[in-house]
Length: 147
Image 1 (spheres, rainbow, N blue to C red):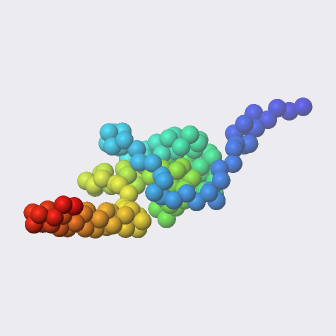
Image 2 (cartoon, rainbow, N blue to C red):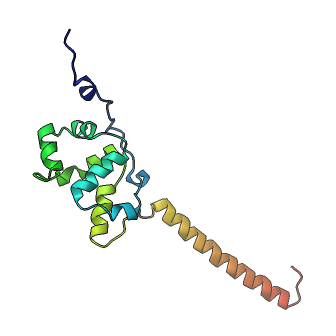
Image 3 (cartoon, rainbow, N blue to C red):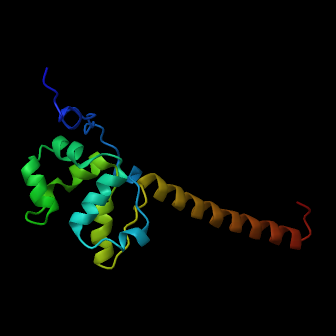
């Protein structure tokens, strides 16, 4: 019986890319670590390591040929930019995007959701109404009414 030495690498745990997590749920990495990365390729590889997947799981899930992946990680070819959202979905993080933002002098942070915005607006409105109510009570007390 012949032993298949590649059995472990050919029978990897399947990554469910159908799990479309919201990008708001993805974690952002420490800027101090991001600042040490020297290339986008390095950021992609770090992103994969942080996801606790191995590179083979990722490139197989994305349908990228092993030879093409080798060319990507050795800087002979570029990672296809139209596939970044797929990479983020598989790894569960935005590290390559965060790296690009950092290199351009920006910080990546999530925007407020519509619900958070509405909540902030209602809080401000409530504070304004409370101030008006307090002013009315002060005026009534000043006029001698016990409230």
